[in-house]
Amino acid sequence: MKGTLTQWDDAKGYGFITPDGGGAKVFVHVKAFGLRPHRPFVGERLSYREGQDAQGKRRAQDVRGLAPRAAPPPPARRDGGRVLLLIPAFAGLVLAVHLVWGLPNWLWGIYSAMSLATFITYLLDKRAAARGDWRVAESTLHGLSLACGWPGALLAQRLLRHKSVKPAFRRVYWATVVVNIAGFVAVFTPLLKS
Image 1 (cartoon, rainbow, N blue to C red):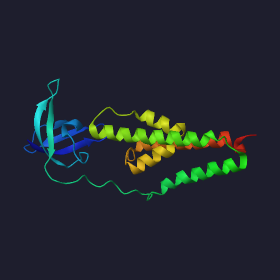
Image 2 (image 1 turned 180 degrees about the horizontal axis):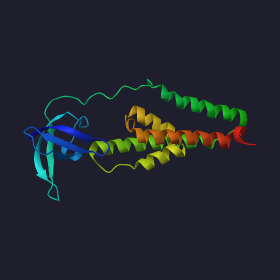
Image 3 (image 1 turned 90 degrees about the vertical axis):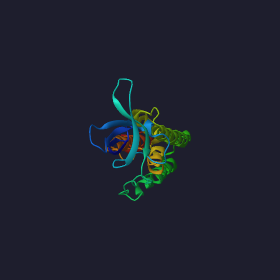
Image 4 (image 1 turned 90 degrees about the horizontal axis):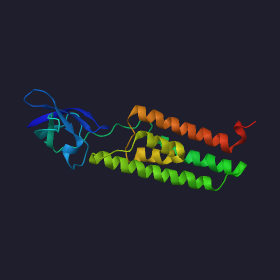
């Protein structure tokens, strides 16, 4: 059968195909696409075999793209990548605080280790999303960001293009950045102490 992908939720990995001949939409899961160079996207022309799931509901299987067309390009970044400058700016703040008030040497190691761990977690989650496997919980990603891993999360969002579009996720992520930086200032500088 042939049809067009008319609904797609990339975060959840499923959507619906509208058959060419009309009729009810057919459910499709990301696993039905197999290995491919890009994610499914709304408007993509597809061929598929109609089957049933364990509950007897219709679903698309053995899905293939009909046109050798790449996915639409990601939306242009409004900030032109300037937001990445927050990482060296924060490193400069940490260095300045170290020079003026002194900081424990382990602090650099904590930020570096947590940023690396967070970046790797984003990478693994992106790979799981592409394969349709079990995903890392968003609360885990936010917890890593809050626990000094936000620089690694920011790099992963930009370099891997993962978790960089969903507004609700982005709002919570930026809240973790603000809380982490405020916590750093409150603990390691005399600015908020009486």
